[in-house]
Length: 172
Image 1 (spheres, rainbow, N blue to C red):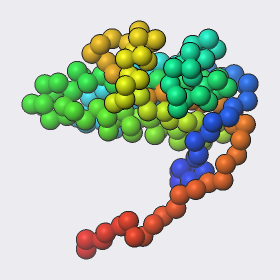
Image 2: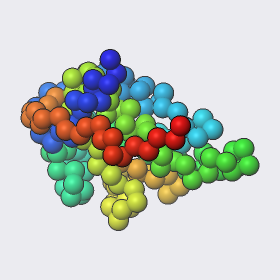
Image 3: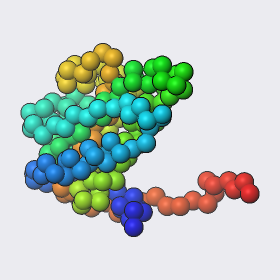
Image 4: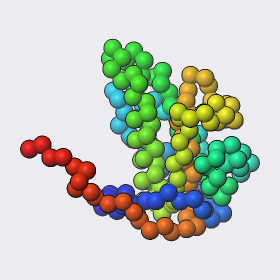
């Protein structure tokens, strides 16, 4: 059942030094690209980083991405806001954060479904954005949206979160 990896997914910050097969990386990227987006504009692209030197540089640059010191993979979600300009009289313009957030969630769920751990580290709209842009050579009209650490889990935090009826309003 799809709800199972959603329930068991946790932010993992410690990883084993085990490379991730390219097929699994491609499965996560496919899951991201299957995400719905405003007017099907698909305002994203992805950078898959397995280079240890670059992973270390990213970990050192982003104060909340220290787990990249042990993660064997970082998937960078890059937003492409211009893809939404002028489409259907501007209807989807400005929806790239929702669209890229949904793509990120699909990566996290796919990683969990394959037995991998992951952790989402936001970049946009924080002051770290230009630093990440320069490190990765991302164009000025593109936005480094987030970094996603992925790897074989070296910790097992208990699942948390729960359905909370108090946060639901029924209109019948």
